[in-house]
Each structure stands twice: as C-alpha cells, then as structure tokens.
Length: 256
Image (cartoon, rainbow, N blue to C red; front, side, top):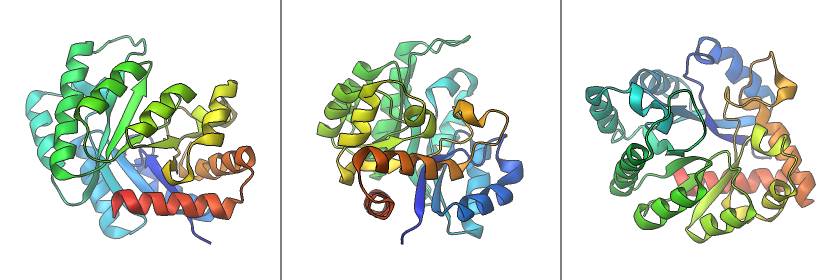
C-alpha cells in the first residue's frame, strides 16, 4: 500500500522546526510517506532545503503569503522571488488572497499585485501554484482565470461546492485539511469532499495552523492527514487504499 502524502505542512516554521525529527518520526508511524514543506520566508526555505537534502521524505515549496506582505522588506521580497527559481523549490506557494479580519489588514490592491506577480513567476517556471483563499472566492477565481497557466492547488479548501466546481473548471486541484473538513458543520463541505473528482484530490495537515479543537494543547503535525483520509473515505464510501493511491498519483502528476 502507498504511504499517505501531506501536501501542505509548515514544518520549518518556528513552532514545528525545533522538534522536526520527532514530528517526522510520528508522521512515518502514522503512514505518511511524503511531506511538502511550505516556506513563508528565506529562513524557512533554507531550513527546508537542509531537511530535503537529508531525507527524501521532504519536498519544498515557497511563496509570500498574503498576510506577510507588509512585514516583508522589498530587498527580502526580491531575494525570495529569486529563490523560487531554485530547482529544489517544487511549487510557488502558499500565495493568494485573504480578506479575513485581522488586526493589520493588507490592502486588497496590494494583495492582488503580489499574488499576480507570483502567479506570473509560477507560469514562467511551470511550477504548481499553491493557493491560499479566505473569504475571497470571487477575486481569487478571477485572478486565477485571467493569469494562472501553471497547475494549481486550492489549499485547505473551504470555499463551498459552487466555487469548487468553478475552480475545477479552471484546472485546479482541491486539497483538504483537518480543520476545514473534520470540524465543518456545513452539508456543503461534506458534498465537496464527496464529489471532488478522485484525480483532483489532495490531503494536507496545514500543521501547525488551524488545528482542530480536539487537538487543543497538542502539536498539530502531518500525522493528522490520516484523519482527513479516513473522513473522506467514509463520505465517499471508498477504501483507504484507493484514496491514498489516487492522492499519490495526483501528487506525482503535479510535482514530478
């Protein structure tokens, strides 16, 4: 049987990196074969390159998150964009649009500018774009439709069934995270998990962010992918082996 794949984990961030060896061992024990490390800074990317050089379990993606734009000096932004050209970076992301309420709100026009610039780079490099979307389905869909030519992933998807169909029509893959799928009380979220085509589905932990409330006080890492797989299998009435095999081939198709 194939091992499971965590397509989105912030393993090299401040919360998880100090214990990465134990986290990786726990992930292996849970049946995780591959982890895509998502990097939001130069420092995280350098850590991820080191881990990927030590262990083939790890792949690396990097991009400027919309919530980090105001905190990133221009010089660092330019260096970060150059880093995305490194062959060790398998994907550009996570990038995107976030209209959630925060203490410091990044202006929408600036989010759009940074998002499109990174989309253009993903197109140039023919690397998948990993898309962050919060309360911004319409603008995200419009920018993807107008600009994205490379493959793309809607990460931690929670945009509803109607929007899912629109993103699928644009060639996007749909990735499910623990908080987005396990704790949703909406029938719409269940319908998304039940009806997304098997050849467009991915799973992720998004660790350590947005952990399910059932995990409060614990480290939320890649091992939680197993719960996501179990939930989707129950909703769809398929075997774990079949879903895991489909995710494996989808991941290989995107990142090989």
